Length: 236
Image 1 (cartoon, rainbow, N blue to C red):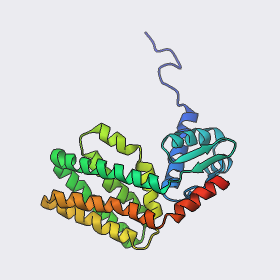
Image 2 (cartoon, helix red, strand yellow):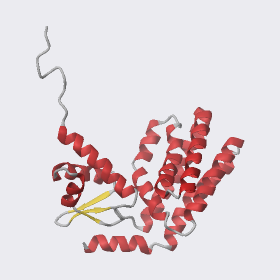
Image 3 (cartoon, one colour):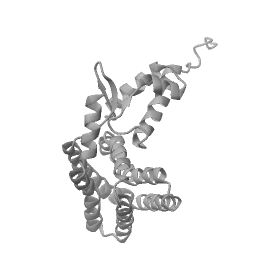
Image 4 (tube, one colour):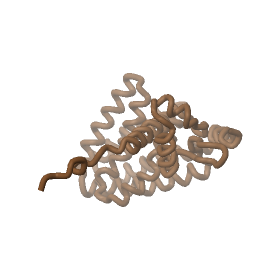
């Protein structure tokens, strides 16, 4: 039987495709710090900058709300997410637990692949720092931590981490402006890789715990920037 014209190939859903593109672009803007924590988001301005209608932008913001990157307040509009000090601590505690487990499983199940990938990522981080390319460095930083989940062999663990990865990346960008934070972070990434290659797992896990824990202590000391962002969101 001949195929029925128009039914053999599924048509492209233009609005869905545009919504996905808009979601990726807006997500990147939040993660990279182009849209600041607590900043108001204008559907009209975003649609204009992306050269699309407001409908896919609205769909994108709905998706980003599910990811925790956007707050939608009735009668007031959309805002980039903010976190209280308590929420930052809670996310760090979840990270410490999940990443430590993922590191152990990745070493047990795919040690060589893990070490090869981490080595390549550290080279990317080194090159980005040499060029002064902070965005490339922070993207590699995100890749480094996701590498544990890539090789841990547990998709549920990876999915659990995926719930927070956007917020973690955005916070990483925010922290990059703190004095010497990126320098300390880079040293810890290199140290973890060296320890893992030597098989010194306990020391690597301890370094990971310290590495993530510094986010908690940084915000405990300098929480005013998140408080200011919260205030900005409430006042908008």
